[in-house]
Length: 111
Length: 112
Image (tube, rainbow over all chains, first blue to last red; front, top):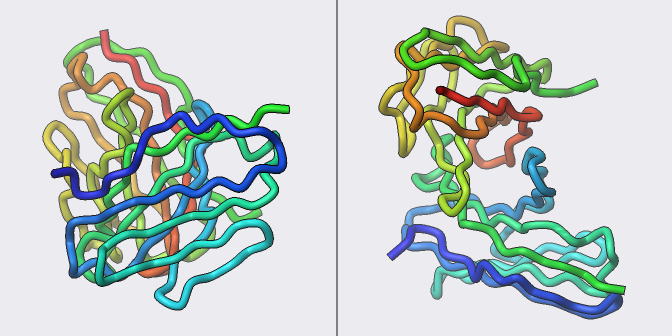
């Protein structure tokens, strides 16, 4: 079983749609969780940190379920510019610098 | 501007010729890290550092060395590069482990 698992997609959605990505992680000791966005051949950019209480930033909402060890990202009112690969990232051991990346979920928003 | 700077951006080298990829950050971050990204394998951590003179292995450290002699710099050293180290490399930094990382623009390395 992969340590951080994501559905690779691609998710093809029309503009304005709501789309949700899930991610599962295997290490119950993990304490920090993130969603990153990566455009083709470019560096990953931090989209959101994920907290137990859930957090929202504009059209983006992230949730963490520690009991089931999964993380979700919801994107509302999708824009063409949201087309990218979304990476689920888990701090593997407490809050050390050891990060485990999921393989990424590709989103393509179409007009 | 707050940033992580990697050099070079592109490098083609020959097998066995030692090389260093530099990484520098201007945000006074404690944590720094190196990753490689390969098609179908995603991003994998090579080494990370939680402070000056403190480094630890990530998932794929074989064939790489790092040093952290000062807080702002974290060079990646390939003593004897091989073709299987052809990859896209990213350096990143973070204030602490519970915060997200800021990534550099990447170094595309080809070993022939």
